[in-house]
Image 1: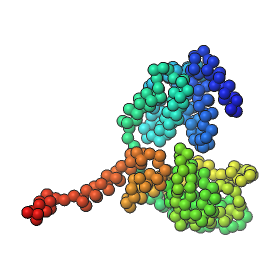
Image 2: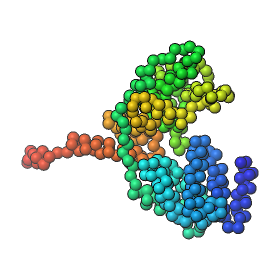
Image 3: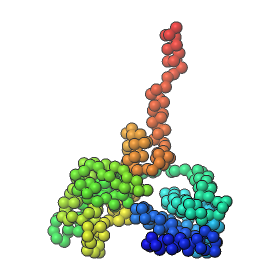
Image 4: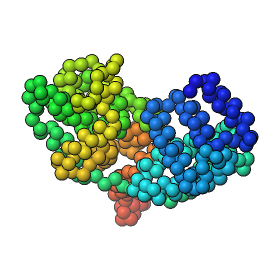
Length: 354
């Protein structure tokens, strides 16, 4: 939509029968048009999340095509949370939180534009939501200790002969090795891995890369020598100059356009790679397990929670602390044991002074 079209839409909203309050679906479209500065992934996430919000409103008897935004009560986010938990269960907390983030951003947009009822604010909405979220707790990640075997599984597979018929299979094997090593060493999200470009890692010669992760936040990620070697082997075998680091190599991918971005392996493809080799290795694993495993290893070996926060790219230290608080407790216990003194020890110091 052009800037002129957006202005026209907003003018239409202001001329509606309900003063400044448009129907919810119209307001959602206007909100999505304000996300031009966000990454394409964020826009897609917000759009799909707000579709869930519209489904919720339909089931609540508040059809978004009819109900004006100033009819939304202060408890709407709290009720949306309950609906999401019922739909996805508490085990899918990450999904629920993602959908709520979009709904909170939409509520803030309505508040800024004056589209809410006079006695309702986005802060009130968030306040009601905080009360129910505060009762929930993060589950400690449960990771199969055999996770490294998934990487070893693909590493142990023999290279496919480079005959013409086997080029696709060989490239996929080399790509999958590089993907699994990247996930294992960096703790990156699958969307972040899928977004990597060759220049980010200098074709496997740079031990670190600056990426834009969740929430459009930049951070530095690091690669092990093994991961870089796997990346270099894959890039050499490709013999192309396409920008994406990880490509599709199936026969249905089509022809490359421009820099080959249309051939980029999608996050779902990264997920399938992990699932394929996890099944071969007999391990229950997902892409996110590599992220948790990285954090667990760092914390077990003495890293601080603040350092793990920066490495994983958590936007808030509270997120890291909630998920990995048990590690901090262990370190506190260690400090307690090392630096505490018994009654007898302290009493002896008093005696020596006298």
